[in-house]
Image (cartoon, rainbow, N blue to C red):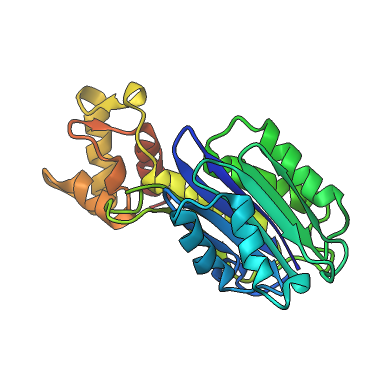
Length: 274
């Protein structure tokens, strides 16, 4: 009832899972991960204990193939299970039980595993794998692009309902205390992968790191225009920009004495609409 990709990005030391299904809130069930350990996707007649148990084994240093074997060997319902695992070094493994509904199967590649069941056909996981291999985008977009390729290839043959994208990286959560870098979910939507793409774009807008080379100095005519736009929106005084940014969730893009072009674009747009 689901197709997914589980992967490791050595450049950023990140682990991630992207998943879509004709099932309510698939993101609450399938994707599991931990920075420094690995990631797991448990699906089909999902055994949710594969998530925490798999991560425990990975944290102990067990390779992906051994984790899959241990999880399935101890499960009397393994013929109905499907699981993909990537370990701390990027080695990947996938398992599809003999009784999973057709079409069901998976493929592994360098630092990823793609798998699915109740699919239009093998072309779905092939499309996921091909898109992931060929992408040069950052890790989150690479995962989501692979998921979109599977969706375009037919995806879940019953239809579409939910999708999720989760990425783990040490200290990457908001505030820096946890390792969940990204946790986006579409629980019930006619086009969940497309909606997930919209949410990722918003996440990048709000929480992306400003490019120092593009920052604009808040001086001269630009400073006047920024001040005027803020006044239109009801913000005045020395801290007007900070106050507006706090309301609009752009605090992560503020740089003293400068303005991020993306923030300026958003400010102008809101002032014009006002």
